[in-house]
Amino acid sequence: MTETGITFDPPVYEQRYCATIQIMEDARWKDQIKKVVEFGCAEMRFFQLMRRIETIEHIGLVDIDESLLRRNLTSVNPLVSDYVRSRARPLKVQIMQGNVADSSEELRDTDAVIAIELIEHVYDDVLAKIPVNIFGFMQPKLVVISTPNSDFNVIFTRFNPLLPNGFRHEDHKFEWSRDEFKNWCLGIVEKYPNYMFSLTGVGNPPKEYESVGHVSQIAIFVRKDMLEMQLVNPLVSKPNIDKESTPYKLIHAVEYPFYVDTRTKTQKLWTEVQMELQRFKRHFKSSEIEEDTYQDTCNMPISVLLDRLEHVGATKELIEELLLENNLKVENECVLIVSSDEESEWSEPYEFSDRSSQDAALVDQEREEECWDQEPES
Image: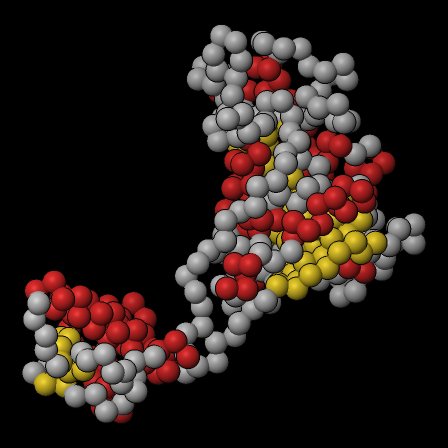
């Protein structure tokens, strides 16, 4: 905070996304989160981070604004890099037009629900139905909900008045204090005692203003069985869809490429051995050229090979057994590698190679954020 305004670094929307990802990747439930539904997905920016969680196999992106979804639907399609470096598990992505208050067949068997800065955009009648849909119908293992903290508004009004509606954004129907948000959460766990919640937030206040709390508050609801606690009520195996609910409309669906490595542990290790031998051979040949000396063979110490492969479970015994099976000579604790240009039968390890180390960069997208929650202009 300066004399003229306040900024957040990183921007608050980035802090919300990162905090939500950290919550989803908590070791207590990460491996059990297979299907995720994000309500109020808008331009689907958060999806670009969420899809990188390898344990997730199904993502549903829901928003009430069909035209907004259609303008951004291509942003969920696989990138070229997703074909170069395939996932280890399948990933199905569905974009759906629908209301967060409506139960729909597509929401069944959801493990995690995300609603980032959504609830403050809905009217009271919809707000009242959200817990019923999420905690009563969907019964997920994890729910993350964020909303502005109105206690922080005293900082903003030091520089500029709030909008004519009394809030930070023209579409906000309300903004809750920390006590109001906590009371709403308490009401949910009282009605749905299978859940516990905790509160956190992002966007730290300026020094000497810590009493106002974070600029954005986050509630984390966790089903008790995820915490090795007994459920108060048995889960409803197939809850009924509210007759007044409007079915969701599928806008776009895509499945990501994935690769299942069916090789045995020994086959995987042999591939790694071949690659290390090739790497050592190339280094040896380049050294010969620099020194203007040439030899028919080079010797790679097994100890060096072991150091490079311990991270994949290699042992000296396993390595020696593989070398023997593949007719490679071992003398004086060294592997004898033919250094001539003529390729040997083990010199092409790539037929077993399953994945490239390339990683995809996040796709930049246009952002429409509140004035205090924007990317800085370059």
